[in-house]
Amino acid sequence: MSKNGKSFLNNSELYKYQDMIELPHHVSKTHAHMPVEDRAAQFAPFAALTGHYEAVKETERLTDERHELDEYWQSDLDRRFREIRGVQGIRPEVSITYFVPDPRKEGGSYVTATGYVRKIDEYERTVILEDGTRIRMEDILDCEPLPKPTVLQQGDS
Image (cartoon, rainbow, N blue to C red; front, top):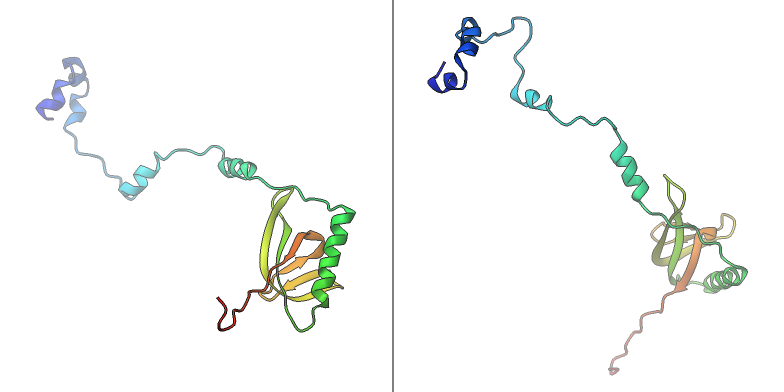
């Protein structure tokens, strides 16, 4: 043992373990030597409440309540859809705000999609946009037609 190693032991402690101090380090014949990475892992923090952090994060996540439309607002939306259906050969561009239910908890969120209307399916009560987005009519909060871009003629400024 080095001089520095002996300095922290008093004589009685040194004498008590004298027979073991100079012995070689034990190497097991039945168990393989544990790699350093695995040895470090045994001192990793213990997570007694597995999944607790995720549950707290899920609880923190906010959702909106679904708004029930009054008769006036619903009739106004129906009028807008009739106008969209009435346009033949032109696919109007609209901005639709609709409710998307949350898959994990009560409530959901309101999303706004902008695109060209491909079809309004009366039977399934859905609006289908050109990009394939399908929106149920009962989920729609607002539908605004977007203004058509103005094409300037030569000579206009």
